[in-house]
Length: 165
Image (cartoon, rainbow, N blue to C red):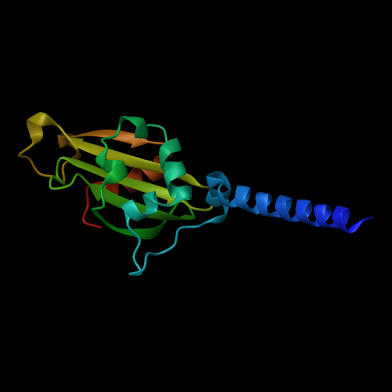
């Protein structure tokens, strides 16, 4: 083999290796599989911060019902810290957010299972004729279940939506 042939072979192998690494790094589905949620620089995890993560945002977008949600649920940076909770024997992230400057009228809770890359949630919108009534009464809201929550998950989300937990 000539020096030129060896050089071409080495360059070809190097380019193929770099190409494979770049393709793998740019694949959001692959990132979603290997990247669990992590805390932000302050040590706290928020709904909006989770939406910046490929694994969470893909699960959110894939969750049935999210196409009908208001835009703030995908873009607003105001939310409460996410919590690790156990539902159905599985550890999940509970992320909560509300409509900016108008929390009583629209609220969202989502449960994210980082191991299964699955999400369920509950969105509440205050009925027009109930705008001046209490927030803790579920009959004042139109509820939208997101994803396919089982009965235990529905009960958990409903209790969290309407309690001070």
